[in-house]
Length: 256
Length: 351
Image 1 (cartoon, chains in turn purple, red):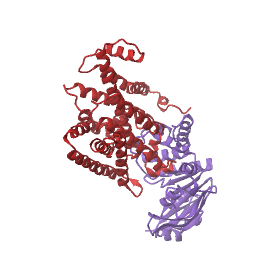
Image 2 (cartoon, chains in turn orange, blue):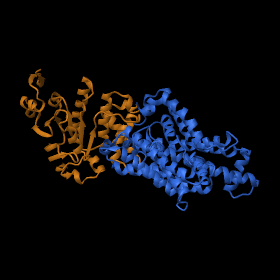
Image 3 (cartoon, chains in turn green, orange):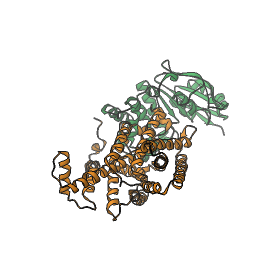
Image 4 (spheres, rainbow over the protein chains, first blue to last red):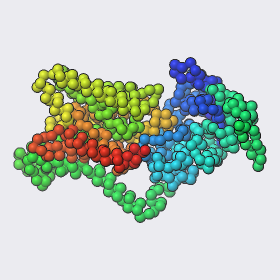
């Protein structure tokens, strides 16, 4: 469980507030989707949750413990993250990348042991990507990379997992595959997942709670059906939409 | 049960690759000893391999079995020189691999980041102006100063970009080189000769005392470098990602920069400026054993030692003079690097 109370953040020396009084409560076994246009503060919110950027007001609590009082390694044992698309400078194997998830559990002056590699292998098996283990991470496809990074989060074994635009840069099939896989793991392991998404349809399909952000402010928060409405989408994106229903699904279609 | 992804496919090729890999690692690990042995009996004064072995054994077991001139040539001149060049080679490539890792930049080395020039200025200052100040301490302090100047110059808004880092290194390097030039201009000609010769990089002044100095600081350096080497993998993923994985990035960078500065400072203080080793050896080793720092760091140390011993043996024997070894490393390093760049850039740089 992770709780955010009145989180307010602005960059050092800047008067512009990037995030203003954000509230959030995400429970185990639930997927929370954060929606908002580019520059609305989605990634900044994640950096604050990870304790990488120090927020000025409010608090972030893991099971009641404030992120302010936790050391780096303690935070990493509570929260793992899939960063946005990136390229490492060296061609590590996918297994090496997954094994990095064990950093917070391995002593400063030691290397990962038998148990750590077993956990890394297990995480790759869980996601069905064990065949990638000895392939260079720099040579696999974007979808496979995302899977490797999710496996790294599993190896990190933290109760909370953040995914920063997990479906960006992926093809149609992989976008849906990765989110379905994440949702399945969340249900099985009772993880708390928060992810940034661009497509409200994805949020409707894969999330249990939705946050709508605009210019660092919380516009709406609630179940997907409550939060994703014509009015809210107009407020956040400035776009007219229609809702189409059928086969038990509700889909959003922009009116352009 | 999840072990061995190569074994799982079970193809003959893969298994052969594995065997070859083992042999490769074994021979890389043994290479410093091999080149060291070669270097001991190859020299201006001919001493047979058998006699060399006899001398070494007699020294180890406190026997008195060897003729006097050969004994002192092997024990007092060649052996300290071989050991010194090995340790310096290991120090420079160890510093190179650590710097490339923490700055997630395959293009940096102690020379490019200005550490070598800083150390050179420290040494020149100590030779020319403050002879009573220990040269090693001066070298370490100025190489540390240079590395932090480069780091702080390159750091904008908490991130160190690759381009900025290389540019800052060039700036700092140029600054300290200019300071060295001032010293060279002002100092009396007698000292000038020793500064110039020493800036070219050479092991001709090797003795057991120098070996002691560098080995002692390498012992201190290997503490973070060997024990914390796996963390270099996560550190090389970038600041924010390393933090999210649970690494206090500032503290770890500080440790690695300090270690690299100590290694380079002490290496420069005993042998002058020897370029290219810190850049080339980590690359070569990465192509051979892969980028995982758990394997890369120890093998870089071994390959660095072997390469430097080999280069110094050539420097002694190519001509009638004792050539500065820095010339050999650069002359062999540049074409080799061009070859690497053309052939293996994709594998070793990831892009």
